[in-house]
Image (cartoon, rainbow, N blue to C red; front, side, top):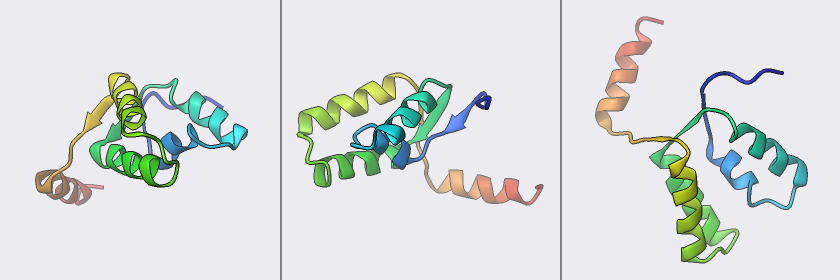
Amino acid sequence: MPMPDKIFVDTNVLLYLLSNDLEKKSIAKEILKSNYHISIQVLNEFSNVSLKKFQLSLGDTKENIEKISEKTIVFGFNEDTILYALDYKRYL
C-alpha cells in the first residue's frame, strides 16, 4: 500500500517506538521513514508519557525529542491556527 506524500503523525505512532509490541514498533518505523509532520502538542504528549509510563530519564526523553524534531517540521498551534482552520472549514 503506497504511503501519502505527507502525513501528520499522532502521539501514539511515536510511542509505539518505545513499545514492546514488535509489530507496532515496526509499523511506526515505516511510517517515520516517510515525509511526516508533527505538532508541538504531539511532542508534549510524547514527553509526558515517556517520563511517566515508560519511565525514561529526562536525558533520554530530551534526546528522543531532538531526534524526532530533526527529521520533520514541528507545527506550533495557537488560537490563530484554530480560527484559521474554522474559517477554512467553511469552504469544505
